[in-house]
Amino acid sequence: MKILVTGGAGFIGSAVIRHIIANTSDAAVNVDKLTYAGNLESLAEVDDSPRYAFEKVDICDRVQIDRVLREHQPDAIMHLAAESHVDRSISGPSEFIQTNIIGTYNLLEASRQYWQGLEQVRKSLFRFHHVSTDEVYGDLEGVDELFTESTPYQPSSPYSASKASSDHLVRAWGRTYGLPILITNCSNNYGPCHFPEKLIPLVILNALEGKALPVYGKGNQVRDWLYVEDHARALYKVVTEGVVGETYNIGGHNEKQNIEVVKVLCELLDELCPQSPHRPHADLITYVQDRPGHDQRYAIDASKIQRELGWVPSESFESGIRKTVEWYLKNTQWVAHVKSGSYQQYIDQHYRNHPGHS
Image 1 (cartoon, rainbow, N blue to C red):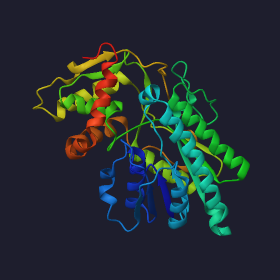
Image 2 (tube, rainbow, N blue to C red):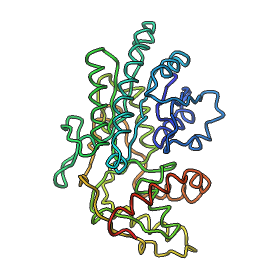
Image 3 (cartoon, rainbow, N blue to C red):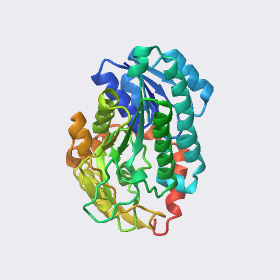
Image 4 (cartoon, rainbow, N blue to C red):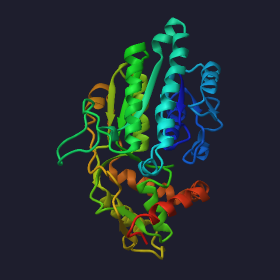
């Protein structure tokens, strides 16, 4: 197969491409416009592969998307390109509407035209796999409920609302036009090559520099943590074995409060960096005013993908989080390059606006 991956220079997209090149005989075409969170250094290990190609293209550019489809002739599309940071969507929702909704519409229309022009055998095998988030489901009550594939949508933030909208568009193109679609909704990812505005890399890198470790509210928000390489395996399984029209929830079976995650990271850094002048790193924890509309708990029921496709995560939270910390400690050059001036300006401005940050 030749698989076109949108957003392939991002955190999850790059993990998918690395998985395809390292563990399959398939080819991957990376389509990414390289916004602040896109980083080709995350793909350095596959860059020389004859089965890998890169196209610097915005999914909102229909002419270029048509050209890419025409020239590369993919057998499947995995759509991961998206603006994905909740805080950024609150302070500036416009880009989320443009990329996540208009961009998905544009890609669907280009894909439909391309798919309709394929000869019959290739047409029957083609797949459009849309990668989404559990945040479209909103907030869970209590401690026992889980998100299933039939949970009603109740998005809370501009980000999750834009992803919910894109999910609906994909389903509509499947229902109305017969486009062979698949949808996955995943829990919080973590692991190597994660852009350092998200909780886990932010805590690791701030701690190493002796900076405050910002925790929203009391830090008691619960998330289900999924190691990114486990997610990449699941996504490949869905695009190659999933049933057309179906949705699959992908979770890590690792529910943790945010404050628990931060404290585990501090303990690991204390252990792995015994010479750090900032030990104990937990002393750097700083509680900041909570995010507007902050969902309290997400948790995925991933029994369907286990039952129907045989996927289960291979990493526990303990093994995955240790691998993650070790990766950041070993890849200081990647970190230095990704932390541009504009990124640092955003972090400083964002957390300065939350009372309690020091």
